[in-house]
Image (cartoon, rainbow, N blue to C red):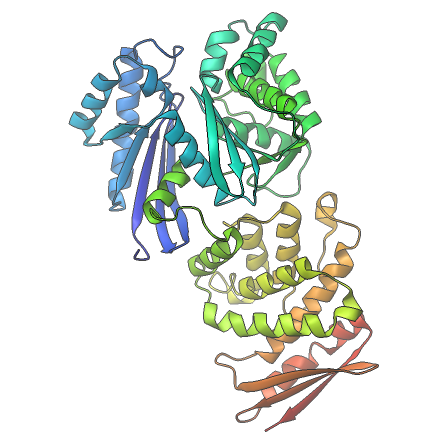
Length: 498
């Protein structure tokens, strides 16, 4: 698979037509270069009825525009799929024929299982889920997907997407208690599951919109929705409060999309009921689903499930931000070695070692934006970029590490609600180790041929051997002395030999 190839995916859904344009970076990573969304409302009437003339006109306009955007990137292939609205509409063939004739876009109607599998790929390649469930709430259908050891273990599909659920059950504005009870009953009738408390991941535009409301209400310190965890009680409160409002009042709720205000409460009720049925304590929000899954199927047709989500996203983020990956590895190696040497001093674990090595690989991501503010840009890119497989706490810690990779002390106060009490000490020590490692590998290519750490009672001796003078490395290490002594209570002595 050649790097730089552009893939476009059009998802012709019941509520909206969405475009994703992705550029391949590596065999295991791609970057989104454009996306678009149009509220076509093809499924404006509950499934099983013909698509209305106005709905088809809106769909045609949306597909004409998405086709033009995709063509501007020279996308190949252009994948267009239809989901619940087209699966159920008796005149779907007529619409598909018109689309092909007027836009040149060939829509393939995917089965509920195919849709579920693509959503599974989008989630499992971007969220650290080993086993559990995925709930994909679309406009027409909702899929409850079983995941076992990062494998697709089956799915149930029901016409309980936000648009269909609202049309079928919540005709009053605001919804009556009886209507809400009927929708909750329908969820239990459609989905068979057990209350085992397994992990639950939510995906789809409605889920992301609900997460945005929670983020704003709670004054959450990170802007990213991907990976956000929402507790069971919070989901229940949100579903109850949204259902009690009229559509016009929901539109006034901070974070509610104006295009979803009339149907968002239906999605919240479905989600709330599924959480109650499964016993899930929290919902993890996924920002990638069906469209990204279709990209993975094209990018990795033989093995679409990534072997290591974290490694793949690190490689993708570094490649997208012009980081010299080969230059970063020697720094990561030295940092890992020093971490082991100082184990009795810091008493940190293997997870912390993993964060340290990851930070060593990502520390240069801000350089191409602006050299003089590279540390701040690196922190922003870690917090906001396509870094997958990490919890939000880990994202914050990584951001702090790359911000202080060379100097300074991290300010974790803005993120206190995400962190543990020992995290300030943890990051202070890890940042100091990273600073020493970067000082040892001050130049690229590095003239240091050998590095050895000798731990004495009151100091750490850094023995360097190399070709030619190592003045640059020696001075860089001297600049780390004060920070290292503050973190570990040890002096830092540099010994250079030929």
